[in-house]
Image 1 (cartoon, chains in turn yellow, green, blue, red):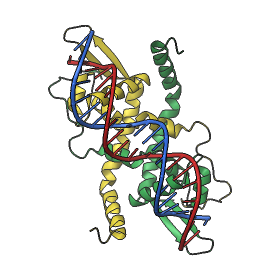
Image 2 (image 1 turned 30 degrees about the horizontal axis):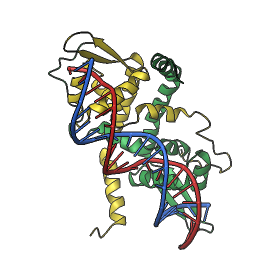
Image 3 (image 1 turned 60 degrees about the vertical axis):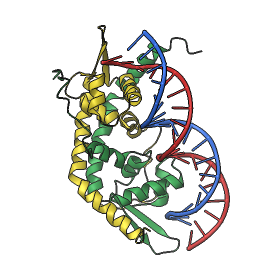
Image 4 (image 1 turned 180 degrees about the horizontal axis):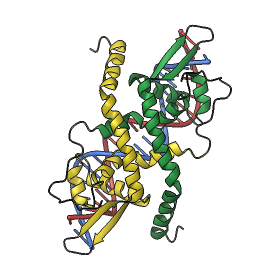
Length: 131
Length: 131
DNA sequence: CCGCATCCTAGTCGATACTG
DNA sequence: CAGTATCGACTAGGATGCGG
């Protein structure tokens, strides 16, 4: 696993509608993944999400939920009661996604120390005198 | 798989240094993943990367490569020849990441139609008259 | 060939205040 | 409770030009 590329037959990864970009667009955004994680254990209310995800604003929670709903990753159920109650729940497709995201998280856990050290040594070499 | 959250014991997913965010910060950015994919088959030169990834600017290629290098995901090898030649290669840690990213891509492929349809019907319900 | 510096725009996100 | 509306800060990223 280290054979050289020829330099002539380098494959174009972004041909027209790259699936890599598609998935990232779905998952990108500061809060999408955390919402998916928080909702993974069953239906959850708006305010519960707001409390679960530290630092999120009402605005961003709403916006991100709308996008996830639009992509068919969460369902929104309004209960016509007073006070109002809205439940959000992952769709089966989103549950699949959550599984693979779990693997990504595992990777992060396994290698967080390695990465932190890599950063530290990289920075150390370039900025010996900070002040 | 659908038991209700209690509303009292909702777990906080963003405790202090959420690993979810850590991995996303590493992978986010418009070009990181595509670079990792393009470099997955072995050492690759700067210009080869530039040609492989359609639409990327010199600036972003350089910046993103620097960040990946900083995080210990790619190595940068300068050959002191003329004209200069610089090879980039994935580290073992990045190869692991690439495998899990592959699963994400697979998910995107499997569900791209579902998502496209979800979007279409969502938009159709909210904007019956575009003009 | 490889890369950095500069300028500038467009999108993203947070704070705040107001509604059904 | 569950949003919406408005503003303003910040930043990622594109364009361009120079340099080793």
